[in-house]
Length: 433
Image (cartoon, rainbow, N blue to C red; front, side, top):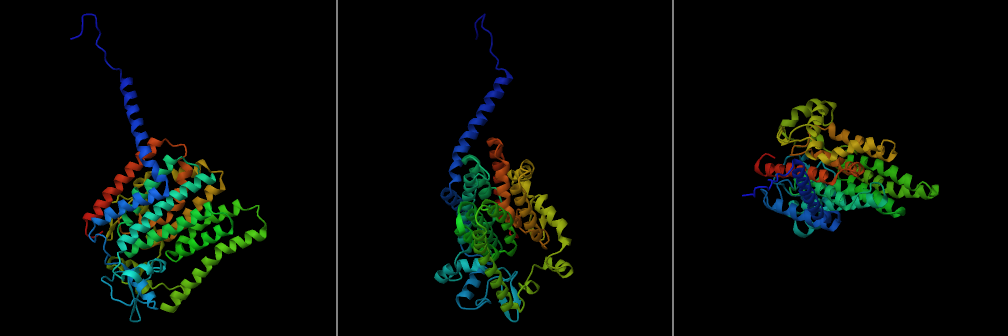
């Protein structure tokens, strides 16, 4: 009991708000310190690899090869000097049957990449494990990319903000769904976006003609994985030409040749590869592939690419809830599933007088049409085809969030991680995804 003259102290509402704000600020600071090591590529690689392998370990094919490890079989064919598959596969969806032989319509670089593994362990080598490793490498490259953007002054960010973006790419984007999964469709995408990241890092971090050669080599590998990824080179070409504009013309022409030569050689090799298999240099085997029966009617009427598919694809890539199904799989709007990417339109507006920002935005605009016109939006939880857009989107996001509050960025990160953790559990639970 209080004394006769003692007043009862009641905390003012403002005091409670101040204490709550202080607690949130303290939580944000602790989270920032916990995440900060992810800004370092080695830490980003190890943490993401651990998470991907743990997730893969509870899948329906835990750490074993999947039924659609087609790149293993193509690697085996290459090792035995042939272009058609030498051994029968466990599964036939999307394989190409032509003239009594079986082929893949996907470009072959991922198979070339795993040839040493297949030579050592055979076609039973786990595509789940090596795809998880490739996925972790892409997260390390994401950390390196953001560090390079900071060091070059293109998009300066603190380590805490870079760590948020690294964590978003690793655990708050469709990479979390694809990297632990294996299977030819998802291995191809992980390898492809990793090649684009490598090219971007080389352009920003390596000076001289050697840097141009590395950019060209990385884009050659990207092109030999997913041909449309070559459009990601637009803004990098502008950046390199602007950065080295004071170099002598002869030097610049030589540097450009160093970048373009491996890409041109790869395009010629891909043309030969298709010619040797199907008799035409631009024929990938799509007309003969064993497509999902639910896609066949649209394919016969509209073809593989058509503006007919664009409205649905736009909806499922940018608007839809991931609980909505399309054909056999899932979908989901990019910007609400990974909301930190909303910084991209803000970056274009904020840097509207910057030709570099507009070149990155134009790159996104050129990368999307092959995605938007294809006959399926991706058939899995999240807009997986938009992974092809993620490298330039990350650059724009880094440009856009420099002055955003760190606690806001952390809240967006936690939301996207929750969305994709739910999706990862959903993919695990539903047999048709």
